[in-house]
Figure 1 (cartoon, helix red, strand yellow):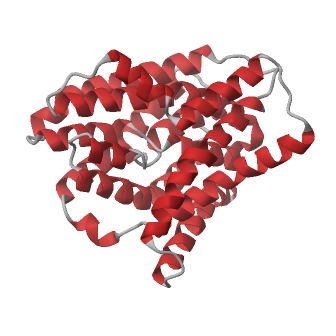
Figure 2 (tube, helix red, strand yellow):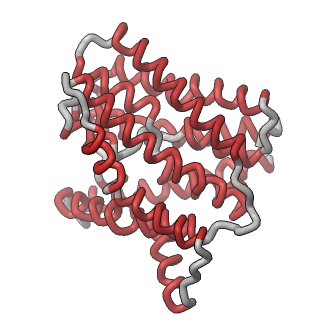
Length: 312
C-alpha cells in the first residue's frame, strides 16, 4: 500500500495541473491564442530560471556522477543510432521518419524529471537530475536538428548548429546557473527568494498550458505510428534501461534519473521544431498529446512496480 501511495503522489499533481488547463479552456476562461503566448513565455522566461536555480542551488558536497552521466549518454546515443537504422525500414515518408525518431528518443525530461524525482526522493535527487538535464538537453537539441534536417534532404552547418543550441533559453539558463555554482556566487536573499519562487512556478504553469492546448480528436489519425512509437517509448525502452541500471548496480535515485530520462512523454518542443523543419507537424503534435496522456498511466504503473521490487 505504501508503494501505491508513493506512485499516486508522484503522478496525480501532473494530472491536476493538466486537467485544470483543459477545464479552463473548455469553459472559455482561456483562448488558444493566449495559451500560445503563455507557452512562449514559459519557454523563454520560466524554464531558464528553473534551469538556473536547479544548478545554482546544487549541493556543493555532491560529486560529479561520471558513471551515471556516461551510462545515460551512451544509452541515448545507442538508441538514436538504432532508431536511425530501423525507422526508415518501416516508415516510408521522410517527413514522418524524422518525427518518429525524435519522438522516441527525445523525452520531456526538463518538465517531468525534476518534480517526479522530488516527489519520490525529495531534494536529494534534484541536483543529480539537474546535472543530467544540463548534459542531455543539448544532445536532444543537436540531434533533433541533424535528424530533421537530414530527412528533408539538407546538411546542417556546424556553425548554425552551435548557434541554435547555445541560443536555447534552457541551455543559457543552465550555463549561467552552472557558472554561479562553480564560481561560488551567491545571490542575496531578497533576490534568491523570488528566483526560487519563479522556478517553482515553472512546472505547474507549463502543465497548465499543456492541458489548455490538448485536442483529443487529433489523436485518431496516424494511429499505427502512435501505437508503435508510444509502445517503444513508454514500455519497451524503459524496460531495457531499468534492466541495465540494475545490472550496473546503480542506487535507487540514480535508477530513477535514468527512468525519467527515457520513460517520460515526448518533449513538447519537438512539435514546433518538426513543424518548422519540414517534418510532419500534425504527427509530431499528436505524439506529444498522446504520450502525455498515456504517460500519466505508464509512469504511475512503472513507479508502483519498481518500488514494489525495490529498484527505487
